[in-house]
Image (cartoon, rainbow, N blue to C red):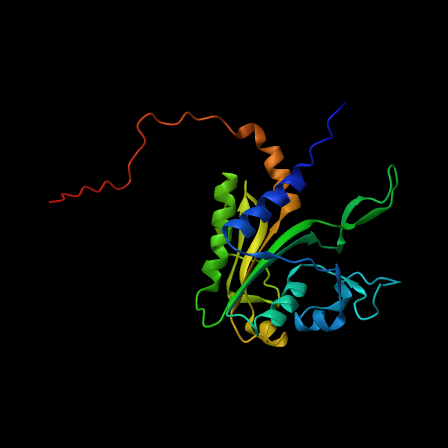
Length: 239
């Protein structure tokens, strides 16, 4: 019996999801890929950029999402009223018509819209003044477990309407930008009825998976030291 082909991206999705859920205490949520015109307006975005379905499951939500954040903001708004802290995340596809993705069929010239898989985690806590650094902790934990270096850059060519103008940063892996860490613009949070500061981190799992596969050969075995370094050595005299 031939074993099935290993789906590296799916394994990466579950590994990162387990890290965020088990180690950091976030709850995974599942949303449909559809969004409404009202959600787009609350985000400060333009409906013309979204793919509109001819036969949507619900007439209230005829558009395909371009990010996971807008549905998570609705989840957050429904829960923060009852809890002092809400930590949730989602894994799912986004849809962008301006970029081309896979072929519609084998040997077909028709190309589908770009459908990258992302993971987005959102956190809000009442009276919290450091949500950005709490979101950064997700990055530090995830990449430490993956044993991969990442770099954060505060230089952004364009800030989206829902991103905070001074508390946003892109992060990269192997010199390729793969996501963003940011506080939510207070105007956007208020549009969803959220009075607390909100932070989120979004990782493009499709890109990260490709990079990890590409640089897999770079990983080298390093023998553990016989006498490991001790960062702090304490001695006590007990009488």
